[in-house]
Image 1: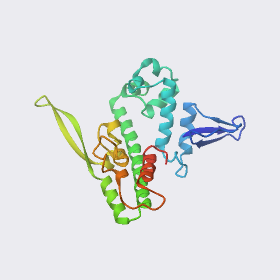
Image 2 (image 1 turned 60 degrees about the vertical axis):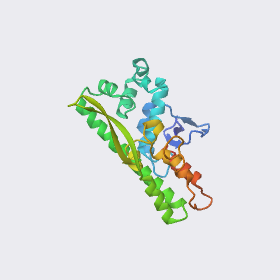
Image 3 (image 1 turned 90 degrees about the vertical axis):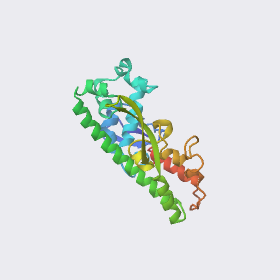
Image 4 (image 1 turned 45 degrees about the vertical axis):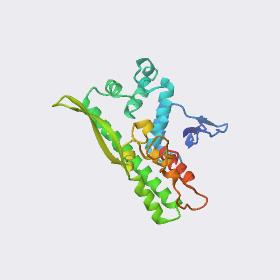
Length: 251
């Protein structure tokens, strides 16, 4: 989603949000300024605006603009001092407060204090978890509305809560041995915590289940493989596509 401004040269200036493919009229112009995007972005968030329903949509837009200006191609680029210095001081402040860069840049720009960084990180985690929980509830609503048989829909929601496992490397301070620790968590809990897929996060998660992702435990028994009844014209594939759009913030 992109922000546009209408009648920029007048006192009746008007900002609005449109899909990326939107073609602006003669009196309209895309906003690519990082500072303006942050200033007006949250004011434009609306549950009725597809693709701009929550705060994470604003962060995603800021991430695109910040990384474009920095020339970020790989995660390591966010730590490149030369790329970092392509931002103005105000843009750097925005980047660190929206957690678009790492701890070192945050502490250099804001406050060199671990406790403060942890507290700000907790605030960030709290609101992103809340957004993901809201999106999850919307996914569950889509499933309930698209499926024709209530008991089958309930079974799918139960499947979305099935257990996935990931392996955590754990260092034992006593024995000085590096151990593998297996964690078992429901797909929905993994998603709310920010883990979406094996490809991105190293653990089979909700996106993999919805996509029946090849190479994961859901390749043959994921959502797209369902043989349950759906309300016409919906199918397992079209419903999975809707749910993925929610995860991607396009809902």
